[in-house]
Amino acid sequence: MRKIDMNIKMAGRAVVTLLVALSSVQVFADVNLNTSVQKVQTYLGDDGQQRTRLVPAIEIVPGDELRYVIEYSNVGDLAVDPNSIVITDPIPKDTVYVSGTAFGSGTEISFSVDDGERFLAEQDLRVDKNGVETLASPEDYTAIQWKFGPVLEPGQKGHVSFNVVLK
Amino acid sequence: MDSAVVKGFSFQAVKLMLAIAGILLPVLITQSAQAVGTIAGREINNSAQANYAIAGVAQSEVDSNTVQVYVDELLDVVVVNDDGAPVSVTTPETAAELQFTITNTGNGSESFRLLADHTAIGDEFDPALSQIYLESNSAPGLQTGGGGDTLYIAGTNDPLLAADEALVVYVVNDIPESLNQDDQGFIDLRAISTTVFAQAGIDDPDDPGFPVVGTQYAGAGDLDEVGAANVNAVVGTSHNPALLLISARGIYDVSAALVTLVKSVVSVLDPFGGAAVVPGSVVTYQIVASVTGTGTVEDLLVTDALPAELEYVAASIVVASGLPAGEDADDDFLPTGTDNTGFSAPGTVTISLGDVVAGGADITITFKATIR
Image (cartoon, rainbow over all chains, first blue to last red; front, side):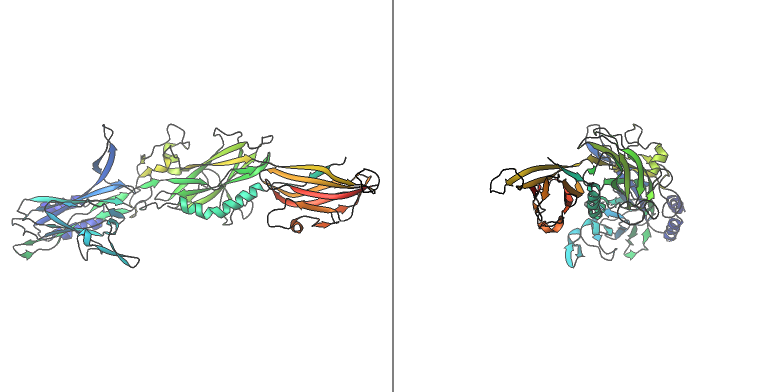
């Protein structure tokens, strides 16, 4: 029950979201996922250098950079098998993946250009551009996948993240 | 000595400029219309999924919560002067037109308040402001009156533009009298987002209170895509005072075309083969017409009334030189070539030179007359 409450709180304003959250917790999952989003804000530091910081993202404008963080945790009583946790996240619509920002300690990261049908390493992704098979560029990516290598013991947690820019 | 006179010319320069602007316009619209990005009010959702196994047994897929962000409305507009060059005017002139294109480069639907400002410094005169017209009848150029373009009235019919939509507007001014050649008058046309005007109460970018780039107006933007609430409106980079893309300058330039005529005697042939000016001598006259300055003189007509002592020699008019490239003497001038039609009772030589663009080669006219 604790987990249901949490999910409802996070559901925000859309009813659709609430239904998704409820359906997901009808299974007594051992792994819990929590997604959050923040805006990457560029500002001028006291030393005159451009720096970035994370600020709450509720409303954004084209050109803004967002960081999505997905926290995974083992809330069950059993260890989760090594190399078995696979987290996938679609690149949100109207956004473009920022090259090199996908992060995940202890994970193997791959990308999809076909809405998650297949995930491959960046250097192996190909797209058809005007009839020519070409190495995919970040704007072609439609989803990201993280494969977590170690065992996830009960009570342990970690996170993965990636950045996108709003078109 | 009799004298040559010029009459019946007017200026075509403004019409010429507008014709050029009309050709360039589609290109300008393409250049100024930038991709605006994700439309205001869009809801951007994201949720992750995970699969995993415990003791070799695959477990059901789990979903994360869904996070949402909403896309704010960027208030951005770009104004471009379409004339390409200062618009030539005469002094005085009424209803001289400038043409501008206004493009909503923001990501939402926005209406704009238009102001034509003639107070800019650095020019020699202030055009007398009269009217702004919105292109509305799909016929290129400004048409006024019934079926014509729409007269703009601030606060009443501020044009509403969708993201990326462009609108042509015309600013019509009167040019004062007694100005000098090459005097210029500036008109700065500004487009102020009505959201900015409503929130800040200011439509002058020079006012210290004019909002800076990044200013947010909570809930003042377009409706979000689910229709639940209005997103924020954000003042966009077109308001950067260094560039001020929300404003563009049109320039009037006083540029009269000046016609000068120089008449001279080329030769005299007396009845005895000499050059004495006696009854019976044939005098060859030359008139050189020069059109200098800028613009075009229209229907240039050169007339020369011969005194009673001179009798015109039939078929002696020759328009000899200064023809526009590629045209024969017979094409444009009346009388054409060498003939007699340019002479009429009571004793006036009349040569019609048609429309002459300033700055071209001199036009040389010769004719002969016999001393009575």
